Amino acid sequence: MVEPNTLADSHMNDSPRLLSIDMLRGAIMVVMALDHVRDFFHAGAMSFSPTDLDKTTPALFLTRWITHFCMPVVMFAAGTAAFLWWQRSNRTRGQLSRFLLTRGLWFILLELTVMRLAIDFTFSGRYMVLLLILWIFGICLIAMAALVWLPMRWLAVASLAVIALHNGLDGIDASRFVSMHGRGRSCISRVFLHLRARGSWLLIPCCPGSR
Image 1 (cartoon, one colour):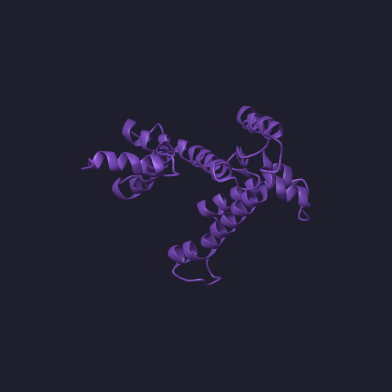
Image 2 (cartoon, one colour):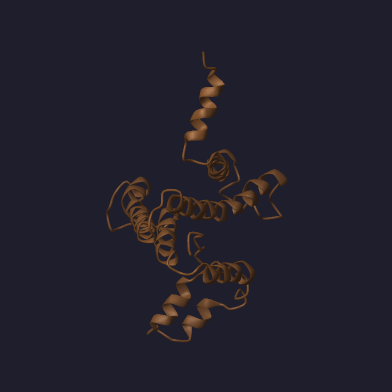
């Protein structure tokens, strides 16, 4: 008779999934949920920022502070998963790029349809279209579909530059730069403005699945 634990261990060994990566994803989902449910269970959540040191409490501050790890870990896990999907099944670089591209387009489609309907309960043009998390995921996956064709050295340098220099342009006010061009904003000015959000530069993380 085979022990149940032996069967479980055998199934885990035969599984193509990595338990550590799945556990990391699960932990980040819990942290994300903590950030979202705070708004429903804390009376002052909608009246002041949890990071406002004049009003917050240590516990409330922690529920917001810890969520800053979510996006970096999610993108790290996405890049790792893409790399493993490519390497462990002997797929081509073109297959990996198409896989990332199609998944990115699906995320964008979901943002514009399912999430829009969930927020507004209508597709009417009277409401502003919010491009939120699924949109960002989709854009990142599409960018990764292109980045996988770059040499590993290039990606390593670019990734280290993003980590080391991501606050290097915080002193530049994007809105003032764009306003200098008046009403007829140039294409470069528009890109400059949209790359800025709340005083920080939006940089797309790189996928480790490259040569």
